[in-house]
Amino acid sequence: MKKKHGIISIKIGILAILLIVLGISYLQDAIWLERLDSKESKFAFRALSFNQETIESLRQVKKENPSDWDKKLAFAMIRQDFHFEQKRDLEVRTVPNYYNYSKKFGKLRKSYRELFTDIEYFPVGEDIDGKEHCFYENSWYSERAYGGKRVHEGTDIMTSNNKRGYFPVYSMTDGRIEKKGWLKLGGYRIGVRAPGGGYFYYAHMSEYAPNLEEGDIIKAGQLIGYVGDTGYSEVEGTTGNFDVHLHVGVYLKQAGKEISVNPYWILKYIEDKKVPFHLEGNE
Image (cartoon, rainbow, N blue to C red; front, side, top):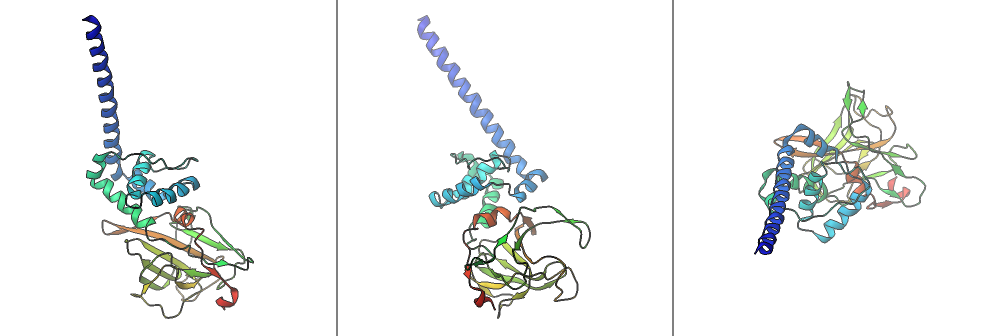
């Protein structure tokens, strides 16, 4: 009898431990979900702190889970406090069912879909003669001085030859041209609203591709202009105030406002999807 009672006690103890572990896990998830509205979490989301292993894992996750990859990514990012800065793969775990009932989690999933669903092509073409190339680094929130103290909310794609009009610019996504024209800071720029809702912004171009107007529907990989050095002036057409480059910005519309998101890892995600070009096709 004592032995039987002992076994029952052990089972009850194990069950109690499991319930405590599950309770702690549920409580931790509740805390993470609640923190999604904090300024710290919102900024961390915008910084998009991935690494190359994360990008490679994301490609695989999207391939294997085309219907709910965004759920797995959002869950993993919450669990990592939005920082995948260590060299580790994206951990794809089973997402607890109660996450499906969280509006905050649903909004986060939607944001990742807007960022990664529509992108198809790298925005700067590839010189197939191999003479010139482009390069870029993660300059998110680095300081800028022109026009007053401010921070950089995009990624600058530089060119090896620093020659305006040499490299073609292609739309990263399908979409509608929402903005086109001169800006004091951006020079000749185009803004494209993708089908999923993301806004993709291309600035400092030397010129536009012919016959493009606001409201036009364009396709991913379509020529929209050429890399240049226009801007930093009220005078339209001003060049030469900085090195030739394409400024890429990515924005999401949330609560009626456009918020910027770091494009660096988005560009890394499609870095091998470059449109080839010949120089003679660019003259």
